[in-house]
Structure formats: structure tokens, C-alpha cells
Length: 229
Image 1: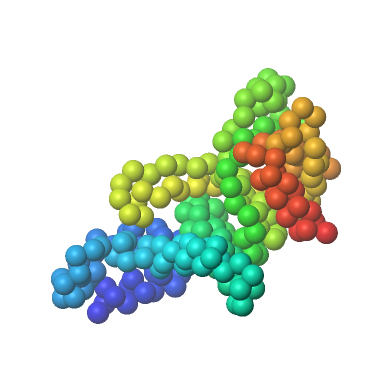
Image 2: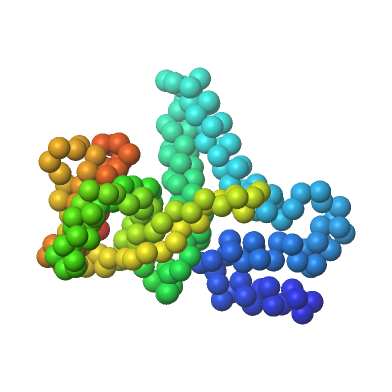
């Protein structure tokens, strides 16, 4: 009972990092005893994945139903249900990435709603700093995973993990963040339809961001503009 209470107490204190908590305690004596009493063959990690997998199946089922329900009564309701499920699936997927952030000294919940997340090539061009560092930064991109919140954008480095279940999921090492109150964007970068600029403090810091596709770029630019306005 004492171990159970300690796990619950630690969970309450670390909700944004709940995935790390489950990793830490999934092999504990408490959970192993529960698994033995219930005669469950799968580990805790496997059961935690099931709700997410179920949502994925719902959207596949709705898409299949829509395929055979065109111009039929109820088709609009099916489309509305599919739109809702896709929104839920995106929110769940984004949250699973967010709780894998490590090294952030603060409460992620205070940054507001997580709007977008994704991997990009990033170049830096800062007014301050050594000239050689600036020149190197211009030509050599960094691989960064960006998390766009209502109040800040976070730059993280993606790290692939080895193992099974949750242990196989990537983690994101926090590098730095920009307060959206001081952010500006330049939608078009000459010579590449996939690039846009995020600049900070009147272009004191400039980040050239290259998306995987022009469509991804457009989605991010539009979402950032919504936040800024």
C-alpha cells in the first residue's frame, strides 16, 4: 500500500512527465504482483498503448464506412464523426510527443495549448556571437523537433530509444524556447518553397526552418500567424 501511495504521489507531482514515471515503475514489485494476480500476460506498457491503438482503428472504420455511404442518409454525420476522431487522434499523438520532452526546467502546462509539433532542419543566424560560429551555422543545419504552444515555441533534439513498448519511443532533449510575444515570421525564403523564418527580438536571433514539404510549411506558417494575431 505504501508503494502504491508513493507511485500516486509521484504521478501527481510529475503529470507532464507521466511517460517517464511509467517507465520507472512498470517493472516494480507492485505492478508485477497485480499482473500475477490478474493472470495478465501483457505488461503495463502494452495496456497503456491499447487506448491509442483503438482510436486509430475508429478513424479507419469511419473512413471505410464513408467510402460506401456517399449520397446516403447519415453521410454528413459520419464525416463529422471522422473529423472529430482525427482531431482527437492528433491531440493524443501530440501529447505523447510532449510528455517525452526532457530537460525543460519549468511546467509545460504553463505554455498553453500544444498546437503543432514536428521535425525540421534549422539554420541559425544571430547578430551576437563569434563570426566563425555564425558562418558555420548558416551552412550546416541542425535537426530539431519543434513544439508550438500558445505562449512559446520549443526547440528540442530528437533522440531515438532502443527497447520495447514505451522504451522504443523517441525522447526530446530540450534546447531552448522563444516567447511568442517577441516572435516574428517571414513566410518566404528565397530559393526554397519549404523554408520560412522564425525571428526573435527584432531579428536579433533568426531561425531558418525547412519543413519536409511545402504543405507542412504552409500549415505551420498559418498556425503561427494565428498565435501572433
